[in-house]
Image (cartoon, rainbow, N blue to C red; front, side, top):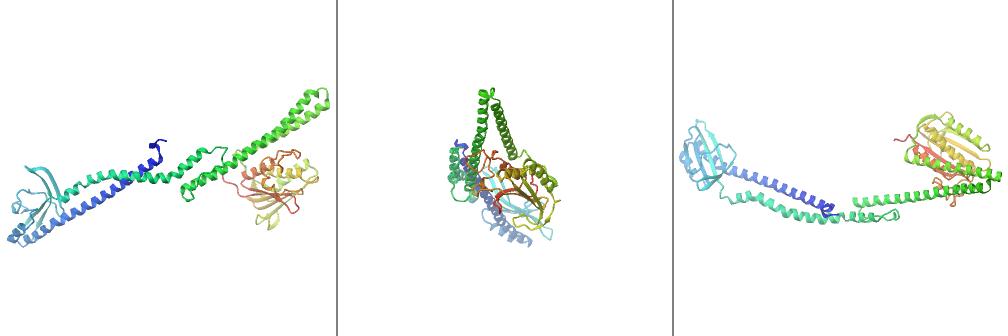
Amino acid sequence: MKKKNSVVFKLSLKFSAILTAAVLVIIFLFFTFLRGMMRQQETRGLMRPIHMLTKSLEKNDLFATEKRVRELPFFISCLIYDAKTHQPLFINNNKIPELPLTGNKSKRIYRKKFYPDSDLNIVYIARKVDFYDGRSYVIQIVQNTENDGGRRIFSGLPFLILLSSIPILLISFLLSLFITRRTIRPVVKITDTVKTITSANLDTLLPESGTKDELDALAHTFNDLLRKLKTDFERERNFTSNVSHELKTPVAVISGQANLIRRWGKDDPAQLEKSITTILSESKSMNQMITNLMQLSKLDSGIIKPEYTEFSIQELFERIKVELTSLAPNAKIEYSIQKAKILSDELDSIKDDQNALILSDMELLHQLITIFISNSIKFSLAESKIKLTALIKDKNNFTIIEEDNGPGFESSIIPYVFDRFFRGDSSHTRSAGGAGLGLSIAAAITKSLGGSITASNSATHGALLTVTLGAKPTE
């Protein structure tokens, strides 16, 4: 990265520019304040002789007035003239012309080459005074500032300030460059570490300083993100491996049966029928697994959105009971619907409510409960006994519990029963049928409905699956 594109360089330059500008503004305001103070001091200095001469003129004591004029300092010029006739009454410097009135404020005049051998550089007050007897005079007090060293220094101060801004800018730039470089050092370390991270080493974490500042919080946030990415990559890697494993077996079976047909199927009708049946069965399994994977993908991406309607939970339970009893005649399905004050294990049931209405997506809820019951029938005893319980607080808040009389879940596998392709053993045996996607789909449906799902064992050691749904999730 070029130096001019460096964040450190840009920040340092901006900081030094802002600091220099701030210093210049402060100095300018201080300069303006000092100039105002000097103007006030000048005005007070010029008003003192005006007040003194006004008192003498008020008494009409011309002798005393003339004496006071002669006693003025050498750098003070005085002109007193009649306001009506402009006839001079007293004057101590013939070079000073009659100037415009200023009232009680001082005024500065600078004119180059006003005199043949010099400039006019003065500050003065010209004030008109009226007396009760009809007399009216103008008192003009002038101070020559040409040789005022303090004023010359003050007038040159802006240039000195401007000149001093150069070292201020340079020093502030160097200091800010040093400070910014030290401050931004954790970001440089983070950047260097990020450059080395790939999908193969997601366990590499960014350095954290432990200072608990914003940069440390940034590194901590990125580390959390890396941990999540690693988990997601591992899950997707396992998912890909499981999909390959699940598809490999039926493809191998289909390929083997096709070879059998090619070799002996034409001459052996029994083998031909057996192979075709096996191919159709495996094709059906593959088609079902692909369908399930597509549904999971749509649920995860939000393509499938719940369509909320108000319906009877009893109607849903009856529909499921009829459908599954016809498929598994030996299975016994019972259900109960209870109105509850709270939704917890310690129920405060009021009474059975067979006419209770709920607000949800009926088809998604139907599929979810069907998955539960299908698993129970698959893994339970020859005569499966399944109990469905609905605990309804109101139409927006309810819990559905499914319990069977099977062997239940081993405690070690309960945290993983909703993982994709999980069947309860590492070998992924196909003897039980299915691809281990049923409960994964149930979990995805529950998530899309804005609820929670848990797996446990009942008091009779059977499997216990609980889905709790709250208000309609906001989009």
